[in-house]
Length: 209
Image 1 (cartoon, one colour):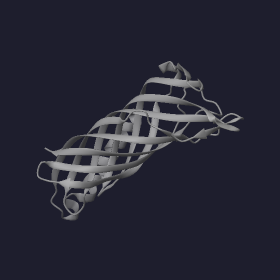
Image 2: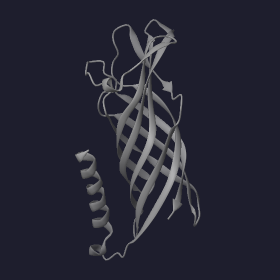
Image 3: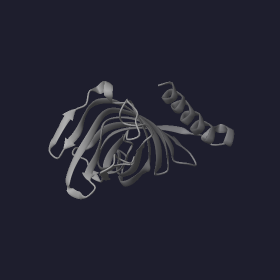
Image 4: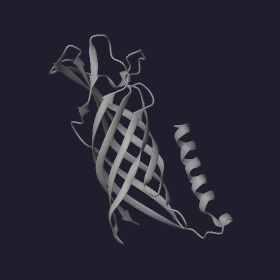
């Protein structure tokens, strides 16, 4: 948590320093608050046990969240932002010599993110508190994972929020971003502890405050 606080402070300092009156730019803060929804595809990036291989898996449910941003109007479109969301990650295993036999693992989190936007480009760090998980045993069968057996998610996100429609009320944006687990999904580390990469597409609407 100290790292997250430090990161927020860093983003704030950079934005203020880059656009304050030191550079002769008079800045006017602008606040936005909105909601977003995204769907995603995921894959495990860690080599699985012998005899199975990783496969691409579409998310079974969307990620849903709320976002708050703070923009410094001036010569740039730099924003700092924070969001909270219900985030899910999935991964699929399949037999190496018979891809018709496969099973899916899933992990669910309450996610807190902080980041910075430069024009449409964004980068953020996500901290996810695990709420539930399922581990596939074989096709159609799985068991629940105890939350104490799941690690706190630390995830890097890069992507873009591209305006579609803008007005005095707010803006509708197309979202595209890639995420990567910086730590394994399970609390007990092993050579097979999954780290999931995902690509998400979605929409958000940000209201001007």
